[in-house]
Image: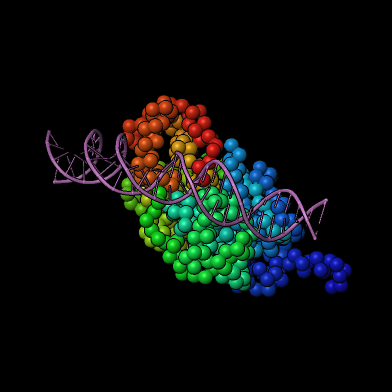
Amino acid sequence: MTEPALATLTRLRTACSQCNLRELCLPVGLSADELQTLDNLVSTRRKVRRGDSLFYGGEPFSALYAVRYGFFKSTLTSGDGREQVTGFYMAGELLGMDGIGGDRHTCTLTALEDSEVCVMPFARVEDLSRHFEPLQRHFHKVLSREIVRDQGVMMLLGSMRAEERLAAFLVNLSQRLTARGFSASEFVLRMTRDEIGSYLGMKLETVSRLFSRFQEDNLIEVHQKHVRILDIGGLKRVMAQAQSST
Amino acid sequence: MTEPALATLTRLRTACSQCNLRELCLPVGLSADELQTLDNLVSTRRKVRRGDSLFYGGEPFSALYAVRYGFFKSTLTSGDGREQVTGFYMAGELLGMDGIGGDRHTCTLTALEDSEVCVMPFARVEDLSRHFEPLQRHFHKVLSREIVRDQGVMMLLGSMRAEERLAAFLVNLSQRLTARGFSASEFVLRMTRDEIGSYLGMKLETVSRLFSRFQEDNLIEVHQKHVRILDIGGLKRVMAQAQSST
DNA sequence: CCCCCCGCTTGATCCCGGTCAACCGGGGGA
DNA sequence: TCCCCCGGTTGACCGGGATCAAGCGGGGGG
């Protein structure tokens, strides 16, 4: 009953059942009891400073991470040293699933602003999902959605022109921010033009020019990293302009 | 003991424990007993004729499929009707994982030659993996590897020039065929130039021109769909030529 | 067996986006 | 406070790969 105050605090601090992101990370519609069994998922939290990496490609895999706050990019480095940004991750999203298959991480995860993640030792994830069906199902869905997301990026890179890709990127960002309670129309880009370009398969100069063009067309307002979306419908129209370039 | 001959035949025909592809689909190092529990994974087999689809994007999801023989492509269709090939699948590979997340398939799977798949109702996959740890682990690895594969394609599309992509494609095909006991250096392409182009983010004319160029450079011999690899090392060198074009 | 159609090849030209270069401006460190 | 550096913007030019077009050849259907 009476536990030391500090212990209580620690438990509360890492309790999924108390977390306001739980509808993003965890299955919904659970009873209070069920929710508490899930509190065992997270062993600790870990802060990652802007510019630091949560893990590197090649490192042994041991845990999944849920973003508590902050912003990450994932990058892949090819044999000859080229770096490709493969994704951006924000609060409530899961990191590290690439490591399950080969017991080491294949990509590097780097914080683009001061961030914090919940550490979920993978052995616990597997144990708990063997004994608790809703978690199992949820975990499978999260893995599958990552596959679907990646296929969406393949479509983006494989069949859209540069302006369509950037429009799709902005619409996607806006939607994900909205889902997290942020403004849908005004936000600060945490990544550089170069990182956006790498993700979208174009050069930073092209990203910059397209931002300027979108601004001329009154679709957005840009000042450095600050973006305000003026015409989301217009962006969606740019996205779906057909006439593939590849 | 004495079951009707037909029943025995049917059971044997769908028995994973007897399948020569099991080291591709299933966890390795299992006892005979353990293997037999896995025979319950597959409910039936299904033949798919060349040109027919196993499932379509938008259809409800109910099962995963393991390719028994044949060859498939997966395609994604965007809002405006553009089609993107997102992968090619051969014997021993798993199809349908995109459907888990949203309970419907997001892509369409089409046979590029007469094929057969093992049908694994997803409820059984989840049930069995709750009770049988090696299967759970294996299944998670398969999902994760699909994510890693997709990220590899993102790198391909995002940071490689056309000739590098095609070289990477040929090397990858050759490796997967070798793993299945086929010749590493001589094979028949099951897909058209257009499908290769869609997958690699380029036009069919570019694919054709590059095949011709590779032939001039004595890297390969091509006649229509027949390919013979003459210099795999040369192809790998083309792949890693650096000097990104995007 | 022959013919037709579809997939492939190859040439000519164009243009999107890459490359190179110069400049700008804001924020962080001394 | 000032300065420096790094990220961003913009212009000029170029080239890889798209587009348009014509011809070919092999395999499947009548």
